[in-house]
Amino acid sequence: MSLGADLFALVRGDAQADRVVPRSGQSARLTLATSAAMAFLAVFAMALSMASGRLADRWSDALAQSSTIRISAPPAELEAQTWAVLTILEQTPGIESARAMTDEDQQALLAPWFGPDLPLEDLPIPRLIEVIETSEGYDADGLRQRLVAEAPGAVLDDHDRWRRPLAEAASRLRLLGGLALVLILGATAAMVTLAAQAALSANEQVIRVLRLVGARDSYIAQAFVRRFTVRALTGAAVGTAIGVLAVMILPSTRDTAAILTGLSFSGAGWLWPLLIPLLAAATAFLATRFAAFRTLRGLQ
Image (cartoon, rainbow, N blue to C red):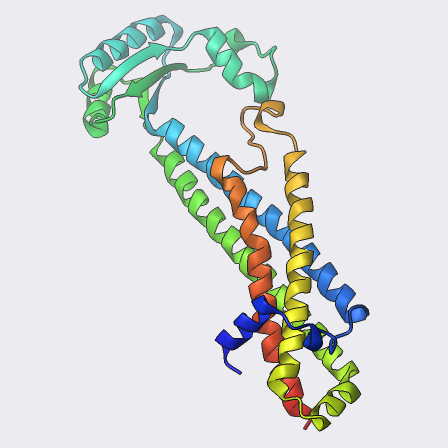
């Protein structure tokens, strides 16, 4: 029987053919449990991929329009160089605004790592200038050359070394998420194949009797394909629902530090888990169809 005919039979159903496959037993429990567990893991793999990608994208976007100038100079020259740098920035095309960070600002930046009581006055911490650029951007090489000439203690960090790894991390995390889903579907196919083969072998005598009364292998295989596909769909739907509920009760971005992001979906991303039961059913359909015809040929 062709693949299209099997799909039509799957949707239409056949009460007589369904009686060929036992409704309960070890293979039924194995299929349901495997599909549910794999769907649960797939939800978390998908959520982790999307959340990690959002974090890397957010950091990359935040750094894309900002730069930092670090001024390291003796205390007597620090204020003069700071004003010189601010003057240069005012005259540089492509820069929207620039401001020298106060001791309180720098204290707030260092507090997550060193605590709120860090004695800045006793440490040789450079002065930082926050630079916000326009959408057109500025000439970083030209600005560096001018800083070297007029403010030798100033160093420009345009965040390019930060943006590039974050952009690469976003693409790799998404790739790893997709790879994890493929591996999960592969494991599901393997387990469903084993369960189908076990069910076919356990019902060898029934299959021989059906052949004696004129049943064709396509009719027998159709019954197993439909039953195992429905089981996989049911188990995956349950596992997906549990996974989505588990993701929903995890701490959100509001409940964690600003540097973290909630392991969750966002906006239309909540619709993506709906594909997991369909993918599990499609995987079970193909795996069972392959296992059924292969096993039936071996029972000749």
